[in-house]
Length: 208
Image 1: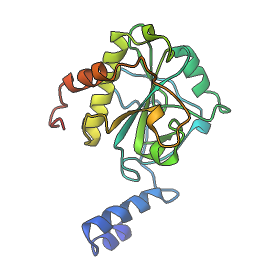
Image 2: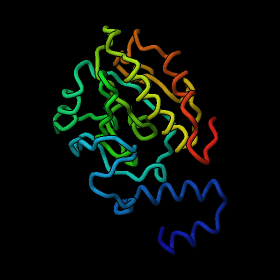
Image 3: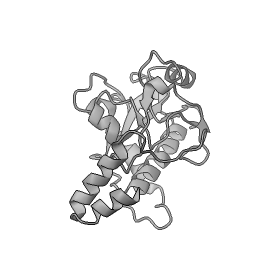
Image 4: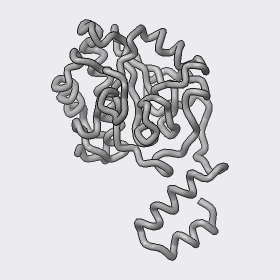
């Protein structure tokens, strides 16, 4: 942050400084540096979504991240990656997981706002994880996929400091105003949350 902005922030209370800092990061031209093709999750493959399907941001400095949104694509892993690269689709999640082996692709950086939730405020506050499969086919949801997804979700919760619970880990259908039904009735929330909680906390992070 520039010296002038820092001087201004020095004269106000903590809450006001926090809000002013967020406003500063939201101003045009102020954004975190990034490296083309860099991923936030070790082992993820970078498959860039079209820039029409997300917007540049500097999260969590401009918008607090406190939610993970679980999606099911109603199609294959390959279809998900294809539509996220399509500028006319106007939607993308940050991650895509494959059913057969839990392979992970990252299509949008976590610091950026992906258009995945159908709700602007939830797009700004959340990270979206798209899963290969169909909501009416329970065989879509393999242990390999659940475990890979659980590791991502646990890592996100720990890095951004919010609890590994159902208030903060939600389905697309639970986003206010959502007209989607995913992840659907066959998504095993009890199993998934148990797997999320079993993931060891990141070094230096306490699980909450």
